[in-house]
Length: 277
Ligand SMILES: C[S@@+](CC[C@H](N)C(=O)[O-])C[C@H]1O[C@@H](n2cnc3c(N)ncnc32)[C@H](O)[C@@H]1O
Image (cartoon, rainbow, N blue to C red):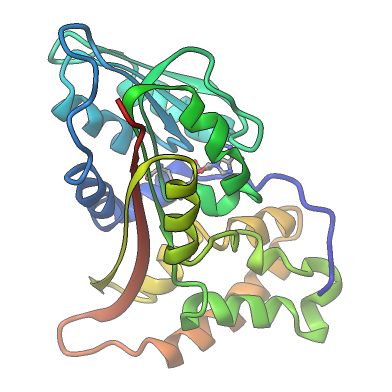
C-alpha cells in the first residue's frame, strides 16, 4: 500500500452536522447500556474523547444532569464549534467544557467516573493499547464506553479506498481513503476489556439508514471518511472536483435511490466496560 504524508484531516462541523440525527442515534443506544456511575452524592466527572462539534457530548448532561463533562478533540474547527454551541453551565447545574487533546496520547488527568467516545477511535491507530491507562484512570465502579463504525468493507468505504489506489490518484492520495480503518472485531474488543479486569458488554448493530436528497451517501462521507482526501486536495479545486465526480458516479451505482429514499446500511460496534467497584 502506498503511503502519503498524513497530516491530521481538516474537519467541517457544518458538513458533519448535516446528518446529526443518524449520527447521534448510536450514541443514545450506547448510553442506554451504561450502568449507574459510582459518583453517588457528588457530581459525576466525565470525559468524551473525540467529541467533535459537542452535540453528542451535551447529551451526557441529559442523563448526568450535574456532571462536569469535558470533551477532548484534535480538531480546532470542531472544538470552536463545540465551545460556541455547548460550553458552560448545563440545565441541571453541571458544567461542559472542551479541550484540545490527541486521543492517541491522552491519559486521564484526574479520576473519571465515565470515559466515553463516539465514532472517533477509528481515527486513532493503536487505540486498544490505551485501554489499560484509560481504565486505570477510572474510579472503582467507573465505566469506559465507546462506539466505532464497523462498515469498512461496505461499498461506500471500499470504493473510496479503491479509487484512491487507482493509477490516477495513487501518488497524490495513497491510502488517504483508508486512514480511519483502525477497528478490531467485536470479539477482540471483548477479550481485551475482560483481560483488563472489566465486566464487558460488546455488541454490533447494523442501522438501515434511509437518506434523502441527491447523492446522499456522498454527502454523508464528505463529513467523515472523505475528510483526509478533501484535506489532501484542499489546494487544488480542479483535482478535488474530478475526484468527487468519479466517486459520486461509483456511489450512485452502489446506492441507487429507492422508492422511499436511499438505503445506506451502517454497521457499528459498541463496547461498555465497567471497572470493578
Ligand atoms: C466522526 S467525528 C465524531 C464526533 C462526535 N464524537 C460525534 O459522535 O458526533 C470524529 C471526531 O474525532 C476527532 N478525532 C480524530 N482523531 C482524533 C485524535 N487522535 N484525538 C482526538 N480526537 C480525534 C475528530 O477531530 C472528529 O471531531
